[in-house]
Length: 198
Image (cartoon, rainbow, N blue to C red; front, top):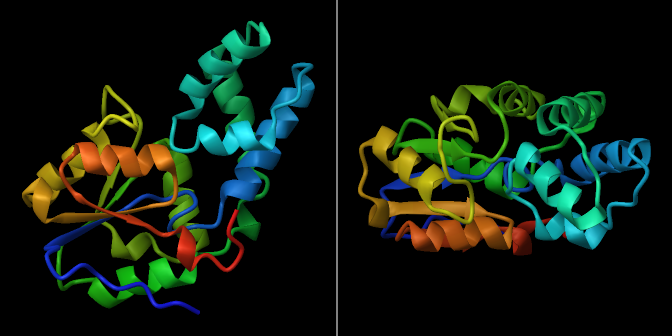
């Protein structure tokens, strides 16, 4: 297994959650597929991964436009998250990333910056036994502009009281990596460290 190491210039670490700390993306796709089937369309898997990092309720707007649907964003968001939560007991950590967080816990500031919502993010961290490592969790409910905008990660830096250029972001999605770069941070793609990379 490849070992993930911190950039020497980094004085704080920011972790994406889904697909970075936790191997949740297959479960999220299963949940979206259930929602799509219920609403009479097919959600292609490659499209799902292209939209990784975007909050659920924003994805609903995009799917409505792409597939000529009229799904209610909040109602569909709830439907999708409920489908995901049924699978939450199967989530495994992405161990090289979690090991890094464990190694630096209590040594330097750390936070989670996710496009998810607070309750699901908390349950996901619990599922991988990582909830005790992060006091700062910035979710889609905490910012106005979502990834690839830098707002999520800039808010993490602000709450950690660390300059953006001294933060290292760990991400698995192109949109998340773009957000980190826009924030002026050190962007690290964790996908080479996957055991089951998509």
